[in-house]
Length: 130
Ligand code: SF4
Ligand code: SF4
Figure (tube, rainbow, N blue to C red):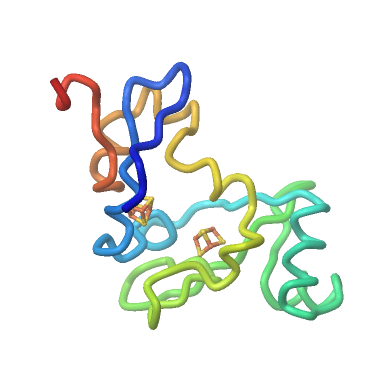
């Protein structure tokens, strides 16, 4: 059992125990960008035993000046290319980018409550908890 996670400045907490039954909503579904920096790319390349060139060619694409992770369509869902449906989880979990590590505590969600609630069953708003 994971303890409830909170973050200063956010009016919700996160129950990571919900991930097991969720099926990875945050890694699948709607198309989106998952940005990574140079250090994160090097970490993933090392983890997958690929050169940076191979990593970029196989798994990343450029949006403007930033790199993002590719998606592929699985049953009408835009799955992150690293999402593994056999385990319902991230195939690069130990080296996943900061954007993934910090979910669901993104400042964007401070003003998009319904969107977050629809996506993540692990979200508990303070008013739901009293
Ligand atoms: S959407 Fe929420 S509950 Fe589902 S896998 Fe992602 S973080 Fe876990
Ligand atoms: S890198 Fe891993 S945690 Fe991040 S979106 Fe892809 S599958 Fe999910």
